[in-house]
Image (cartoon, rainbow, N blue to C red; front, side, top):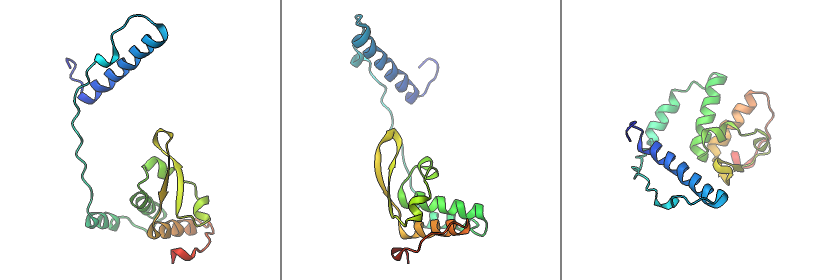
Length: 145
């Protein structure tokens, strides 16, 4: 607190100290302070605000899909909006499942947790457009028309 660290940083440091004390107690076996006695500062719940549909539309209108770079950005935004993927997860996607016309994927996300993500028709349509522009043949899927 004297150094002016944020409550979040203070909490992280105290959590590390707790883990270290648990390690000492369980592995090294000296007499140490009970880790649970260390009180963590109360953190404020962050306020999350969401874009409205109109704001999303206005944002997408600013992306020039006439260039490959613009199209790639548009597809990324569509995928993020449709699937709820984190940006790192979206950027790590492989094209092969989309070549096969899938609408859902099993991904391994943050903390190595596996989950299913779904893609709507609009996102899949834009993915197909980008892959076609790259010269990658994508089979037509009945459920995308």
